[in-house]
Image 1 (tube, chains in turn red, blue):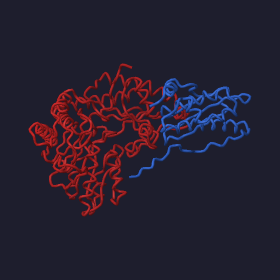
Image 2 (cartoon, helix red, strand yellow; image 1 turned 135 degrees about the horizontal axis):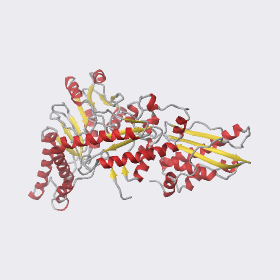
Image 3 (cartoon, one colour; image 1 turned 90 degrees about the horizontal axis):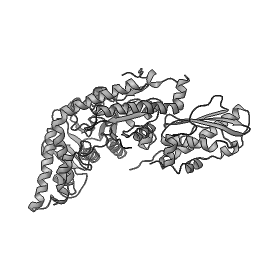
Image 4 (spheres, chains in turn purple, brown; image 1 turned 45 degrees about the vertical axis):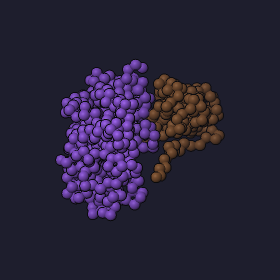
Length: 407
Length: 144
């Protein structure tokens, strides 16, 4: 197999050459510990500050409000556990949604087991939170609302500005996991009243193992990782200087390109969605049609199962992902797909294609053509499809969603 | 993650398809867990003369059902009853731990088809139990 078409940019991205070049000297040349006093090491401290400035500016924050962490998962854990602990005297109620990343959901589950009360808000069929539900859920004891900026599986973008406004009006702290949104859509933490925000580097063509948490000035957040005085006493451990430098560079490259690149991706995204609907019957787009990340496509193919689909795509050189149980290694298909009300059989047959800087129209045409033969082959093998052809069952996509291969 | 044999049976499944006038048909699994297998049998003089399958499921589900059909073809009913999930797994050079349930499903699909055959032909097959709704996924216990 010589062809490789990478369409899993929401899982991770390659580090850009410019990022790698920027990082390299910090492995062997500028290896000093930024906490050391001598000038040789001070250079590294400046490099960290430079990255911090870039990231702060990208989200309209102040440099001292940005803390480097190991990635999105640590940022989510720190934000949620930190607020829960520090504001315990005020209350014990946390509001989140059913479609959050596991880093948020499992942290909330953990707190729930330890005496906190958690409300998991429902979402609608497109994955959107209902603002009235949020308003109704806030009570005296509510200390934190944590709702993701944009969903990693179905790409739906939440009404963050409205959520931020409601939180501010009610004096509740607002955290958002912006791992998928950061540098894909413009973010202004002040305009959106965001108090804490999680970001990750490897989703934006930076290195893995580094991320950041934005913490609004005035928010009390104790350390999660105790140790030295790094990150202004709030996150111990010698800084991962090469990664921090790379993260900063990735943001520096991505920001000026944001508008143009997201327009290009949106066009490709919609082209691919249309192409698949044209070529393959009994398919359904998951997630909101327009309030959607520019790089995300999530489509369910009825009568077939996602892992088989992925293996067959892989054999054609295509890297993608699925929300089927088999790919998650658990009993149920993706909690996100179930939360938007997809029946299990439709959720098992989902395919997530996330596009990025190298994606071309030709690649997507190749994938759409591949899907035609693969889906036909898997349906030929499927007893469920056989039952449908023999009119023993109805098509769920046709009856429930009233779609017949058309958006 | 899969052995060469699993990949071979997934990409070139043996005996895939349906069957007109099958002597026995068994369907097991459910859409909730994401695997459904259907086995068709043609039985003559107590020998499985033909066997076909259709499967909705992951790579391992397809491969185990394909292998199961190979293992029972030409066998007596008595022999087919002893095609266990272990035999299917061994024939495939093993399965990832999370996929063992697929081989159990394949064993059950064969037995369900045999049960259907016995019912339709009003015979008793010793040691054969009626198919039951089971779920072979183990609930993961999470504790913090």
